[in-house]
Length: 330
Image (cartoon, rainbow, N blue to C red):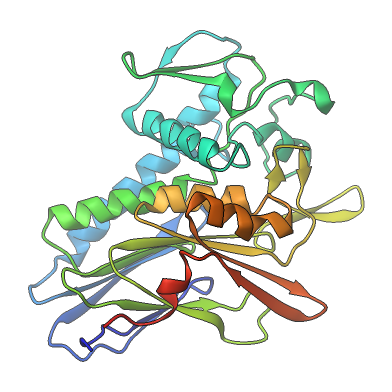
């Protein structure tokens, strides 16, 4: 059995505990990102200029926030949402890539990941943006009504009132960009964690142990998984919820019936090469009927874990592809 890098991450409390036995130096960079906290833990046998690395990581996060934030009326996506036009408009490279990847995941999830449900979140009090939303069942649109032109790097919406929400993919996309940046400067042993969207990377066959915090808080963690050069992203209905018409509802919208998921004990974790893809898949799958989630993941060959609390007991279910990440590899 090879030596393992034992790096423990509590996904939801965003704390790192290093128990490494090698001779590398460890560096921890942290800050604010997208309304949450990020941590980047680096191990290197060479000196790392943490001030420079943090500056560049902060720039990556800032640039994606300026592009994808639904909380800022001046962001690129908010300006697009406010357009009273259905014509193609030229957009930035990263917004185009976000929209393209989002549409790909929408196809994978049979439309359960849908970036056009932003109007439903606004309607129910999740954003402060005063944009008008389309009421009732006559909305008549979904993600397929966002049209991309690869040749012109442009986008248009078929209906003026379409409101795009990228919160289900933006953090994962930023993790992927930071991954590419660290590798480009010769840093190959690291963990990136932005609000529970994580990429674990080493330049050898060692694996990183990740402990998933228990959302019920009854235990310190509910599962340990082992990753290398993989991302894990989580979506939880308990993380962001409001009271709407006397009931607590989560931020997760089922695009099929436009209802917010009211079960506030759900957690979905997805493992994938791309953190953006894992992020979006987790957001889409958690919107499904509970009994369909793992079965659909098996049909699509997706590594997924589904948790929920039933009568005070946490129920855990895994797709077939997820199980191999539950043990250390020889």
